[in-house]
Amino acid sequence: MMRSRLPGLIAWRLASALGTMLLVSIVIFGMSLLMGGDAAEAILGQSATPEALAGLRAAMHLDRPAYWRYLSWLGGLLSGHPGTSLVTGLPVATMIGPRLASSLLLAGLTALVSVPIALTFGILAAVKRGSIFDRTVSVVSIAIVSVPEFLIATLAVMLFAVTLHWLPALSSMRDVESLGGMARVFAMPVISLACVVIAQMIRMTRAAVIDALDSSYAEAAVLKGVSPARIVLRHALPNAMGAIANAVALSLSVLLGGVIVVEIIFNYPGVARLMVDAVATRDMPLVQTIAMIFCGSYLILVTSADIVAILSNPRLRYR
Image 1 (cartoon, one colour):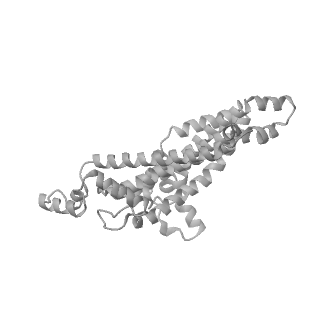
Image 2 (cartoon, helix red, strand yellow):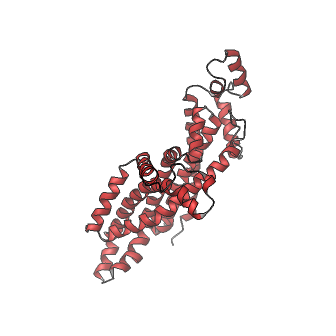
């Protein structure tokens, strides 16, 4: 009698993700300690006296042991209060909230554009393997993946903003008053992020579908006279769902790095730009919390893809 392994597998995957987040928090805090300077120096400047620096460090609890500061920060992070900004004195959650919403909106629009296009071209390229369409899609995808986001963003500004004057060079949320205004504000940031995401997702989706089409059950369906469309829809895609979910998750994780570059170039008011400003002022509670958000987002994507792979694979669900 077969027993379902589904609850145990999912519980183990979630526990692994939580353990990974704990290790990531230790690494992030340790890296922040290795950064030169501190918030007291950034606030008072180089002309500050040692007494003034010592007094400000004591007021900010920077003179406490590292383990005490880590446990205090981790406890606040788990309770939803990750501390107070060392520079502005405002709660970190209050500063991150609006910026995080803006970044999630940008990432959501990019995913909404990227996923349907990439899956469509990736599946068609796999079905038409070896054709001119497949070769063209593969060459263009490799070429785009080789180009960094900052170069795509710079070229987009030069073309659409400087040369054609179609779109604004900077993205301001104050201009989002209508659907047309929203399209103008998000057009170039979304294009800059979507190009690399689509190209990478196409390549991984194509490989996953080709692997499913080359399997024994797909070959058996061909011998039985099953139509090509039915083979793709009923045999290849369901069995490739786990690999496609991983392709989507890994491709969307590119957004975590690309959004930093895009927000800086287009002056977009997102959480990545806030992190860059916090690094410049050595505002460690803000830097650590945003870094945890980025790492947590990546783990959520990867864990979700693993769970989809478990659900789509009967050999993993049952003993």
